[in-house]
Length: 373
Image 1 (spheres, rainbow, N blue to C red):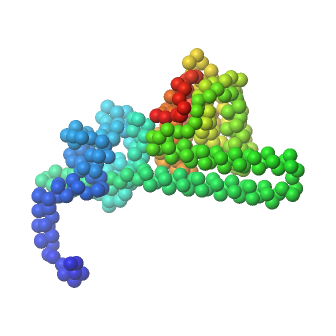
Image 2 (cartoon, rainbow, N blue to C red):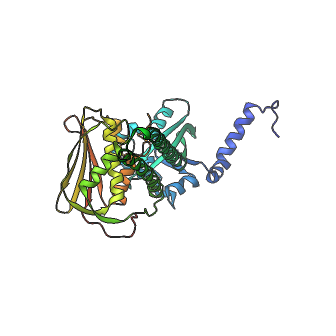
Image 3 (cartoon, one colour):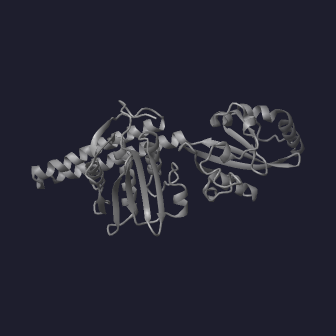
């Protein structure tokens, strides 16, 4: 039983510490639920506990001994430099890298956010705490990792869903109050637009939940007009009061394509919304479509240029959050375009071209009753 008055001597505590490290600690760490990774002074993996092994999906930990954290987690940028994890320009924005650096220079241990994009296009959202220690004249880094993805993602989706519904409800209430000053021909289209937005919010919420769980997404492939789809996307975005005066120039051919209209509309809406939010009413935004032999490309261009950090983390979940943004728009757009539309998404951002996002999809996609990975 704990007694606040009684204390063991410092020498007794140190002796117990030595016994635990030498005899019991490895066995204890194997069974604890937090994910534990121990690195050498050169940031190479020397130990993983069972929780960490399960998270990484490895049956034999010996396969990862000597690798670095980004290499073990298949980071998109781990091989961007010949020296591997920790050496590329992307690494200076990595929370794990920053946690290790601060521990190495003696800063007190604290939790860092790590948004790691892997080669499959998925993101690890981790809380990382690093504590250095020495044993038998060797220096190590004791790393405790927390997987924040599930709870954080659910919380963001729920907040986004409720916030959007509240905004629409407020707009509908204002419309009802103003109905006495509007004719029926004026009132009906406005109310219909608000109801369509509510339906769209519910649909988007369902898509995002199913996408993250790797489930089939309701929807079907169909023939539709590209021009009509783009017009609908822009019209719906302009229902937002802060975006209604944005200047958008269009270069859209009058053509039909066969794809999942609902998902393509969601991807386009995410990218056009980002462009509209990045500009003011005097700046031009260009939405264009390029028809080629086997593919069709949708381009969204705005004049603002993303800074280096934004560019390095652009497709990483939650990394672009803050200032009222969720940080999942481009992440979801890429995942839907790649895994559900059999397409690709890319971007350039510089002073010469501004920022241009390109979605390239095949003209014909296999006909299934639902879209799935």
